[in-house]
Image 1 (cartoon, helix red, strand yellow):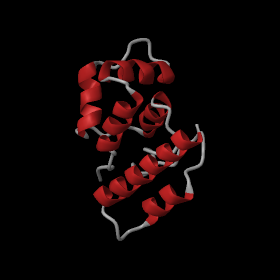
Image 2: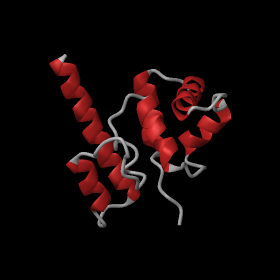
Image 3: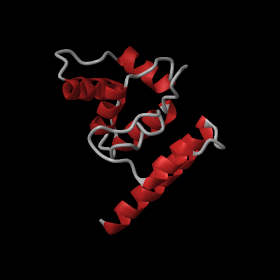
Image 4: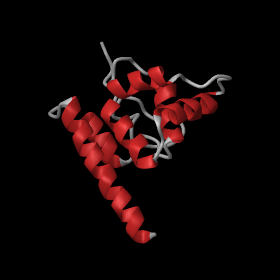
Length: 122
């Protein structure tokens, strides 16, 4: 069974963070303790959803992009090891009536609302 990786959410989070594919590959590699960064074409595959990402990579992407644990990983079916997902993300992950695409859309909307709140609070 193929795990749904929130590729669109990864692309959008990277864009919002101002991180290009080369930078993301380097950041994730550093977090994972790799000597060499991931090549741009590897990151491009993450963005397209053409590859299954192991949980550790999804967690590293969250960290590299400054996201709270669970923002991406819960949508991929992984519970973050270094934090707890919020109740909204857990509810979405558990809702069998939503498609993977619908879960991704709702979670992305929630994240936009959270970002707006953080911006307003300064």
